[in-house]
Image 1 (cartoon, rainbow, N blue to C red):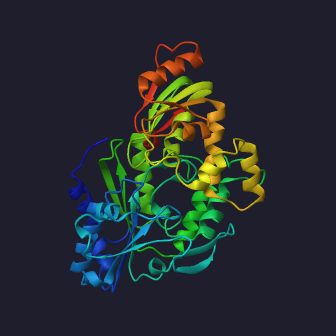
Image 2: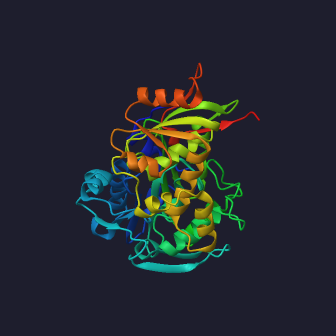
Length: 396
């Protein structure tokens, strides 16, 4: 994947968008601007994007005092001030920053989707004179891809909206919908519902980046919020969608480092991508430091249930809970294959709660894998930054 100059790529995308008018034309005549950015759990290059957008607003006659940045953290925890400063770059201290709160934030009811999702979005964004979405496009294990509409749903949505949308990944039977998976948009009910919900806020412009596996910028796409996202998805698939011929007895994977392995909850995205390549009874060695432990308390609580079928019944019959769904997905993997987490920060009890083993280093993990398999295979598939790649099995 090529490595462009980030500033040049950003300027080019804003001046020559994928579809729709350039940013300067979109902002012309505007009275105010709301910029939506992701929280610190993703590499979005917002430290470059936000100052550039603010400069464009000033050129269009929108003063800094009429500009706001909303951090789209959905149901994620609050963003510490040092992280906010990193996210905004040189714009820090020059623009009003608001953290969205899906439970206590001021929300605007915008309607209901055709699938029955009540749409409640951050009022500041929903009523913006000019609304610009930013973010990064990568693979997502049930929404298909990140970026685009996810800046609004779940990013700026209420808990009610998020839960109603995310539960669409389940069929009435309780099984996971076959199209609710990484790399799939067509027929994916979670994605299609997100798009319908986001459209109610009428975003004016989108800036999405695609990253290299090492986190550096690979390309930037801007313009119409749906068409620019679609083009970013096509770019990602050209460079990050790979194929292997058969399932493997042993797969080595890396979660991609911070922020993708801050918690096991975040590292699960990499686990999901890599586990798809492991044969039943095989071994996945996943390097994920997880310095902040398991993640949301609800995730840890549901992992302790140890029974994916019981969690699935709770999801079907009770109030839907996103961490419960991720706990179900985690336990389903760790009970199908042996997962060995390589971390010098994760507590052994936390690994055990997730149904995994813990190794302090790769050498120890390989010894544990050999014990499980009888011996190590002559070769093993290795996946760097597993959450950024989609590796598919082509054989039967």
